[in-house]
Image 1 (cartoon, rainbow, N blue to C red):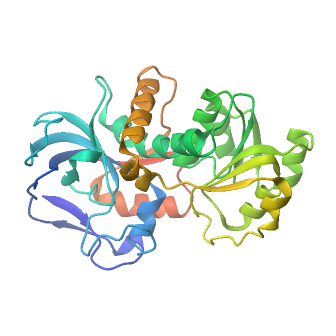
Image 2 (cartoon, rainbow, N blue to C red):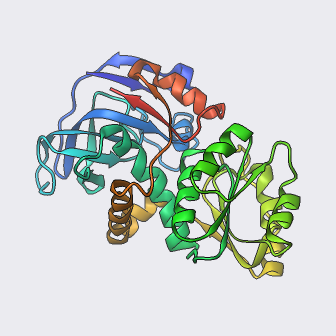
Length: 324
């Protein structure tokens, strides 16, 4: 079978397309014929040895994919050969076949296509866990989403609107913000051309925002935290902007605010039952048409390194999907 391989840590252009032996599932594992693999920013970190999960070399990148079950290992009961499934893990998606943990392999809802299936659970799972479980976002509250045009950012915009919040989307271009507006953002901030803090003051009439969803970090984190309302919650989702910010802790004291970590991958393992409940709710909304991933572009397997480069260069709005 063909697979994109990371043989040495580095940038996407060091990845290679190779023929490798087909894998065999062990106990508790599922062998899946990959149909689509959507890329996420952590995939660009994993190939550079900069992410929490560090698969042994060589490995195929790609955390989130969908496909058809080919065979199952001992003890696997909830899926069988021929089933259409979604799966996720730290790696393995950029290959014609992948081995997945049965605990993170879920049947696709009837009628859901492979591209949608591969583009839904990671982004919406992360954002729903962040907004519902970690921030306890309430109807009528104000939600600021930084990096709002990325995969998890757009999911947070959609879910925030669905959960009854007033959503403020912040992104780096008017083109990106137009998509955020389509997905439910009531207010837009272009933080390339506008002052983030001043715009938040204007929009909230000086009250500040109740919840900040931040997958960007870097220089935007501190001005955002300074814009929290009393008892606001700042969600630490990721650091796509590059630098991990160093926050003066007196800001949390002065605002009576909370800095809350969001690690969806570990949540799915530590609180599997709650995670599965979240996923069922997300799947239901997807099938009802209440949420839908924005697909920026389809790529072939051979084009996967370019797709990862496009993500690193902030050219992707929503999701980049490799279709096999």
